[in-house]
Image 1 (cartoon, rainbow, N blue to C red):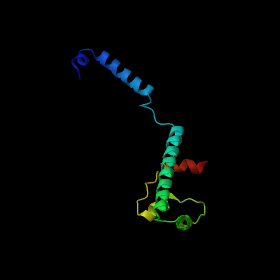
Image 2 (cartoon, helix red, strand yellow):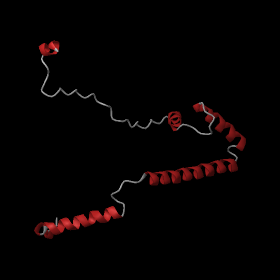
Image 3 (cartoon, rainbow, N blue to C red):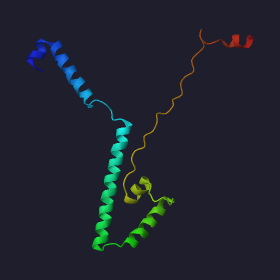
Image 4 (cartoon, rainbow, N blue to C red):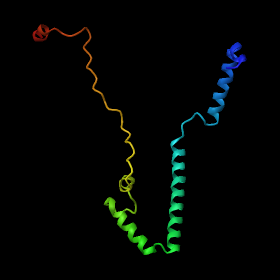
Length: 131
């Protein structure tokens, strides 16, 4: 805390609020929008596809694996999740690599609420029978 902040707290508060407003304008205080998350995810997928293709091309060029061998391995791996969809469930991939599954995000459970008593309090047992 500066000495000026101590003697003029309103000035310090105004300066702090200006800093917050500037951060909000620049997007520093906002959560990222779902659209932005999707764009970032697509960029990550494109980068991973490029890296995978580079690795495959280098392996084939060096003679480590042939294109036919690669296709056969991909076909076997694709059948692991019992779907011939040219893809693999990431959970299956994690298990095959011995990695832990990510924690599941569970929705909050619905707790049973107590029933409210009728206005005027509980009805005595004798009154219930008389009705």
